[in-house]
Image 1: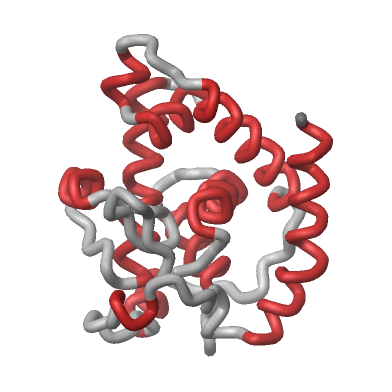
Image 2: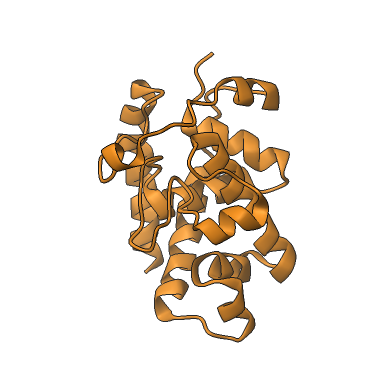
Length: 183
């Protein structure tokens, strides 16, 4: 069974007690669900993990499943540390130290609003495939992803072109409209 990236995110989120719609919304906002995304400050992958965040949760941010697991675990850590979703999202974006000191930039406030709107769009999204943790491990791509060769390329749904069309059209439109309405 071919697993899609959204399915992998949902399953991992369930495994770690994170709302799957929230995890999908974070990955959407961070990378547009592009597993090859690179940030200007060295962030990588779907959840735009920094080396420090990946090390903190013991994840390999260079593989698709490792990045998903690391992103979900880091989000879980922020939820546990701050106790509410809004503050946890601010910490995911601006850093827990900044949020603890009360430093929340306007861009972070917008980030939180964007994710809340995206989450609403994902809340009713149907599950395409159910997979166990064992199936997710078996589906792991090779660990030697050539990040340099893939940098800047949009390849968000390599595993499922049909889902790319579905998400690229309908869901992204719905999520985008939700973001616009929230502003």
